[in-house]
Image (cartoon, rainbow, N blue to C red):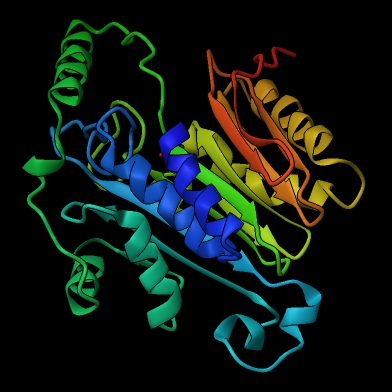
Length: 292
Ligand code: GLY
């Protein structure tokens, strides 16, 4: 994770943009087999990989008022997402292509993969994305299901990033292989703008955890809306304790606001966070779980 964040930090330090930074971080995490995204994704009940990803970017007011990019022309905000893709090594790059190269926000399945080919993103076989670790977890899940017992919680491992650059543009991105035991065709929050990913000129957020609860609560949008009243840390703690904890669901959220302040909170067994600021550099954190 620290290597991934270093890539984003290098881009931001070099006056690069927030979108490039969050995508670079996610590509590195998708390529690492330990995370539940890209290579190493959890498997569906059929034993296949189906991945979701989304990205959203919001220009500052000042930039949004200038004529030019598509972000400027649509009130400074744009988003792209893919769902249930099976043959794309880096779904986050395809989500970015949906945002930048189509008039759409969400493209799924085989149509998304056709778009990948059209924009020059390499396709791979589904098998290439499956690690031995994911296969073993799938076997345990299948055995538990056959015995009629709940599988041991296997964690989530969805990856996400949020960043603000030196021009005030905010970007957030999320990528996942989904949740353990998902049926083929199930789409989680990581593909849904407002739920797993959200950005506007006040802040950007990315979520992990039980996708169904995160979708019904529009968790990331809710957290960003809370920035009107409070700090990033209070905003994220509030949405976790007032929504996921009450719903009996587990998850976590990271957030950055327009002043570059950072928030993160979760109520899962664990969630690792790495932060980068120009003043403090990169820090690796293990925030405590919120229980109530
Ligand atoms: N949060 C990941 C998922 O539910 O698919």
